[in-house]
Every structure is written in C-alpha cells, then in structure tokens.
Length: 416
View 1 (cartoon, helix red, strand yellow):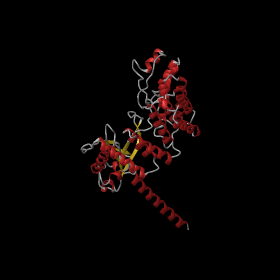
View 2 (cartoon, helix red, strand yellow):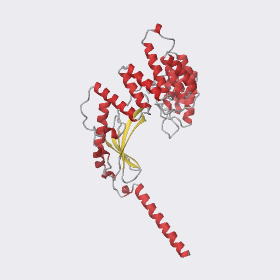
View 3 (cartoon, helix red, strand yellow):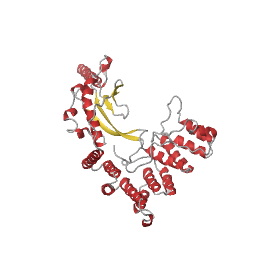
View 4 (tube, helix red, strand yellow):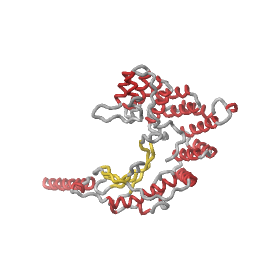
C-alpha cells in the first residue's frame, strides 16, 4: 500500500510540474530571453489598414468609430478583423474611451486605441496610439517598451462641411437605435443640432430624452438651458421672472442632492445672472461626497475646478476655501487625481492676508522629494506676474488667473 501511495504522489508531482511548465511557457516572454523579438512588420502591415480606415471614418463623420465593425464594409473588409497568423490567432482589440488631456476644453478627450496580443505572453500587446500630435505604434504590457512612429497614409479628399454634418447626424441616429439606453448618443445629437441652430429639432431630442431617461439630470438641465437662451434673445417684458424649467430643476436637485446636481444648478443660476444663487448652490455642492454618476460626462476634479475657479474670480473667498478644502479631502481619500486646489487655495489665502499659508499650499505642488510635482491644471504660477511672486510680495490686491483650461461646463458638448 505504501508503495502505491509513493507512486501516486510521484505522478501527481509530475502532473503539477508539467502543468506549471505549460503555464509559464504560455504566459512569460520567454522568446526575449533568447534574443527573439516579435516580427512587428506583419502586424503593422495588417494594422495599418485598420488605422487608415479609422482616420477616414473620422474625417468623413467628425466622429471616431464606436466599434471596428462600424467600418465594415464601407471602409475596410471583414478580413481585417479575422485572427491573423502573425499574432498567433489573436484578434485586434479597439476601444474608444475618455482620456485626460489638459489641452482639451473639458480636461478630457475621446480617443481610440487599437491593440493586439503578442504571442509570447498573454500580457504583452502591440498597438497604435492615436495621439493627436505624435501617433505611434507601441509595445506595452509584459514586454520591452518600444515606440515606432506611426504613418497614417494618404486620406481621401475632404467632404463639404454640410456632408460631414449629415454623416455625423446619420451616425448618431444609428447609434441611438443600436444603443437606446446610452444617453451620450442623445446628448451628442442634441449638441450637433444646436451647433447648426436647429432649435426645434434640438428640443425634440431633449424632450424625448426626458421621457426615456426620467432619472437623468441632463434632459432637465438641457431644457432649462434652452429656455434661458431663448429668454436672452427675447423681449424681457414678455417673459416670466424665470423659466418654469429652471424652477423645476431646482426642485429636482433638492430631491436628488449630489455634488454634480448642485453643480449643474449653479451653472443654470450663472446663466440666469443669479450669482448669489449660484454661490449658494456651490456651497451645497461642497457639502456632498465628491463623486460622479454614470451620466456625468467629466471627472470629479473638473466640477471642483469649475466652481473653485469661479468663486476665486468673483472674490467669494469663503466659498473658494470651502470648495478647495472639500477637494483636498477628496485628494487624501484618493477620489481625485488633480491637485489644482493647492494653487486656488494659495491665491485665496493670499487675498485673505495669509501669505505663509499661501506659500505652504504652493510649495506642496512640488511634492516631497523624490516624488515628482503634483498634477495640476493651474497655470500662471511662476514669473514676475505669477502667483508665487505675488505671495513673496504679500500682494493682497493680486488677481490670480489659473488659466483657461479646462473651460467652463457646456451642457451641449459636441461629440467626438
């Protein structure tokens, strides 16, 4: 009996050893250990066709494609999506997502990415980065990082603006039919129609969105924005004190309070030139947890940035302090990734006659060595007219301008 048990353990150990060897063989970049590198020429040849089709689609719609299948058959053949032998049977993976971009108006930008798994490891990938300035093929993941400049190729002649607009509208309609529960498609269509001053059609989209998304803030906000914009171009004597839609949105926010809902109310109050009411809404926003919902289009730091910058510009210093303190706590809780509150609070403390506190905030942007400087949207910190020099002079009259980006919130952002 002991002899059989000994053989059983030996076989079991052998099976485990072989299994471990197969796992390591398939999940580690063993080919690089022997100097063997992936032949990326074949991958780039196949991927270049997909990249070119994506750029042509973008040129003709002013939109990035949502899925690779959207490119078939008008812009490329289905064969490009089939598993390729150079990649060991892998498929190309495409994603369109929001990425941080300090040069964009909202602080984020929709950009696509295209990648394929490399055969030497399940965690090694090769893909194309659609960087607006320096697009490139890149190795990333469990492999040696390398970049290869990307070549887009010749694009066809540009279409007329009218045809691009028509194509974009048709594409958004197609996406609404395909994904009727995605409010971003409705928001994009309304923004596109409004950009062409097609107000009646814009209202139809907004009203339909209100019926289809009864719990979302956006249709209610959009309706109030349209009413306020109409009021601004009409005869004041024929208008009520405020649009009914604004009062309805205010009541809705009180029933469903959140940081972003109070923020959106502050946007409406500002649009209605009710600055004190806007400040009161921001004070309520600062008391809420710093978080965003699924239908909020921006990262949480964006809303805090917009409110704190406005509070500083209008010299509501106590409100600016309240907002930046809330922002600091969210930063400590790892709920935001931007430290712009330090510069805004430094300017606030300087205006309040606390240059020592202002210097501490501004110095904190540098980060403790050897950590790199903190990420911040704030500009105009250095130089003879910058915030740091004003703190050194203890100039309480100094008016700090943290920069134009990200820009103020737009209820109708054009789709990307």
